[in-house]
Image 1 (cartoon, rainbow, N blue to C red):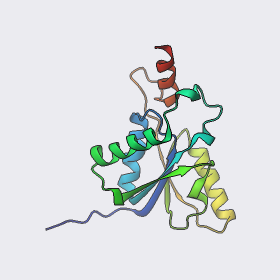
Image 2 (tube, rainbow, N blue to C red):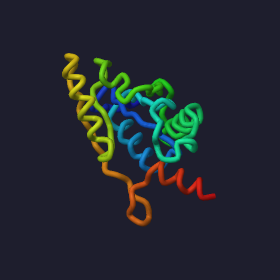
Image 3 (tube, rainbow, N blue to C red):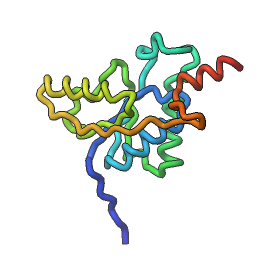
Image 4 (cartoon, one colour):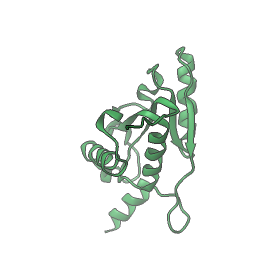
Length: 157
């Protein structure tokens, strides 16, 4: 007998650089896949990295995409038809245009962007998204885990 898992939402979205995939990213992704039957992941392209700390050490798009797919398939046990990874070339992407999107997962750090997404959706006549916010994941010394800090460590080597 096969059991079908019931999800609160049909389509959930999230976005970011997912650079040097770390535990904070893992938690975002785990949450999204618990909430959505399908998950849309907007992965930043180089246009959005300008001015980031040590931007030259941001992994290339194809590497970040590969790491995301590997984590989702091999660690979360999801199938390719359960998610889509799309290029994010501007701060909002399809989050402000896709009428099928129902919820958005963000961290406390990116919550303000989720609020802005909802403002723009409403301006365009779309329903606002349910906003799912997770706490920041901390390292062993109580500081938030960040891709910027990982790049700083790499730069020191």
